[in-house]
Amino acid sequence: MRDLTAVKDALKDHRIELPSWAFGNSGTRFKVFGQPGVPRDPFEKADDAAQVHRYTGVAPAMAVHIPWDKVAEYDALAAHAKAAGITIGAVNSNVFQDDDYMLGSVCNPDPKVRKKALAHLLDCVDIMDATGSRDLKLWFADGTNYPGQDDIAARQDRMAEALAAVYARLGPGQRMLVEYKLFEPSFYTTDIPDWGTALLHCTALGPKAQVVVDTGHHAPGVNIEFIVAMLLKAGKLGGFDFNSRFYADDDLMVGAADPFQLFRIMHEVVKAGALAPDAGVAFMLDQCHNIEPKIPAQIRSVMNVQEAVAKALLLDEDALHAAQLAGDVLASNAVLMDAYNTDVRPLLAELRQEMGLAPDPVRAYLASGYAEKIIAERVGGNAAGWGA
Ligand SMILES: [Mn+2]
Image (cartoon, rainbow, N blue to C red; front, side):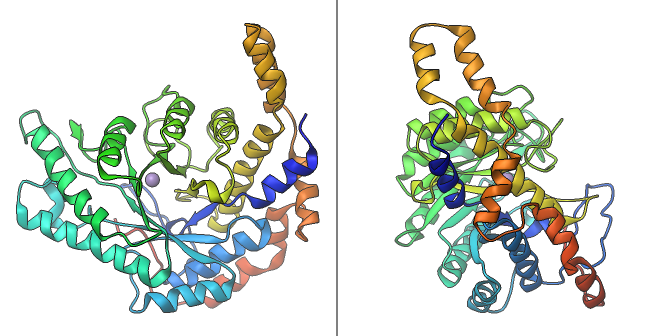
């Protein structure tokens, strides 16, 4: 067992970033079930995100998504977030919801569409300048549905050209995080389907280009911690989009589907010394809460990540290393499973009390009256949603 004070210090320093879109209405292509009290604008989303930070103490940033979080004055949004106790995190671009993008955005065969998409990505860097955001998160819905529909290699050249233009625009201290997803909305090819393609583009670009691992964007059975270990070794893991999926990408709460996988991922992160904020790995949630109340679901998600991190920190690395070197398969596995099977909830409750927080963040939030307050106050206007 490791020194408990060191474990607690690492947990206090760990940061989890919240997605603005988790607080708005969301659903599937079949139906969006609206909830009462949902934010009407990005300012109210920041208020809700601040509630998650208030009860967990480790979630002081909210990522935004453009244009869902478009506002007239981004410095005003940053100031509002700051007054609420949080900052604006990653800026997520959106080049998939305009009619122009039916055949792709930066990989579209039409140069006019590519130009429009690139202009949006560059606008997102302007927004980063105004909000003080470090990271631009790039996910592309680009791909094709049918063999022969477009030239696979030529689309990669178009992607590389756009990424290089965005890279050149990044200011000091700014980064671009390139996200991959194996399929959907395209069904035949996706232009950045996997970590290998993302890594090839990022390596060609330079140190400010990093890969982001969305845990939901893999085929069932893929060993995500292996990918994480490889990216960490290459110095190319820029961050995570945490969520869970059972079948295809569905943005369920992180740790809901497979807490053991989350633990295995966090073990690789801890082992590589990449947990602390200055290691440059952004631990972001990318989730939607379609049928559950949103703020407590975000609190629960933060707690799920904390539990996995705590178990990873408690793992007896010396014993594991010794067993591995001895070739003792069963002992190695037992050391890992001992850490995973530790009930860390009392430790985390104690940690929260040391931080001046309630031991049970969900219960404290539910007792606060905030949910009732926003339901009463947020009447009229248009509830925020992801615009699909
Ligand atoms: Mn994502």
